[in-house]
Length: 497
Image (cartoon, rainbow, N blue to C red):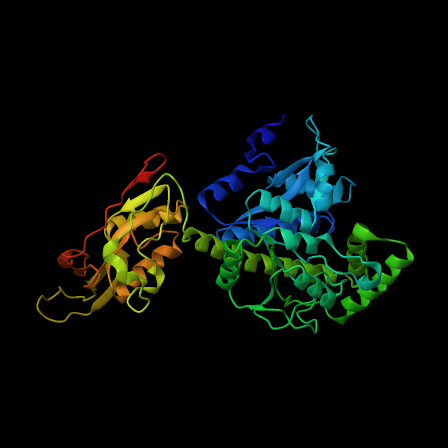
């Protein structure tokens, strides 16, 4: 077995997960799944590998780990090394990649290669939207970015040619971010089928469902998503209700290739029909033919929409991760006690917006940080002359969040550890700001871990002269502010700071 295969770790026994992806999933960091059909069959080489690299960069810039889904030598994979992506990108033109939908997964698994393959003999299963959804869900990845999804083919009311993607959306709880359904399909009938299957569908910041190459289809969207958090809340609500369906987020393509693409699509459809091309072979044929007829305009537009989808998908994955981090969980490593003294926390008028937990809310983490939160104010003189005590001096004032405990919690949060922070703040804008900014850094809090004092949040003011030497400082610490003590049931696997 190759060193690379030895380096792959497993989530369960179904899907082999790249170590980087596995670590992200274990620590609650956002991960986005990417399909492999778009790499192997959607575009020619080297444009396909260039796009794959750009999409990965877009995700990483937003703090998201990319995980390309594929089947390599009969083994289901979530996440590929760079050399594997390069091999996959060449495999389509070399006839080493089979277009693989969900029905093909069991058949692909029966062809497991026991011996190490050379680059020229590696056999790939390039996963469609349906197969990618199924494998992503098996690997516990909840967000998936693609170009366009399948749907009802034009004339589908007679041929019954309906993509498995729609079936998979009805039974696999994964958020699919696309530019709508592929341009060769019937948008209106596709939405009708998705409604019948009970799949939540919405357009991204638009009242019209997009048509892949164009942001306009003439069909009103079933719902509208204005931001990533609205998608995340809808998805989590569906899971809490026990719904197993996925969710389709259609992102308008703001780099449309124009009417010549639509004309080329119609011509390509006629050519496909005349040549007797059917089923899974239709889409690759149409994409190649349209690209030739439009002189590359369709390819350029296709690449632009995939990158745009990646940006939206990354934001959604981050939002889902944040919502899940603040949901009630049950982990045996640590249990937080009820804080009977904070009954007022359920009152939305008196509780900071970022910390509206009931007294019994449980938030868990393998890392617990306990310490103070302080608002640091630094006043520094900029006078060219020596600072004069007892009167006004020209200078600058800097304000930031501080406190040793808070500082440590922020660092751990930025490193991806998602620490649970015990602290005390006042019921004021300063305390609200501290918690809000900590949440943005990945730090967790709950109604039991935060004590809300009636006074203002603790603050420290330092007065510096023009040489940055400390002239004096004032610490305003409310004596009634006490940090709650965590009740730890079992410390196995828990790190305290």
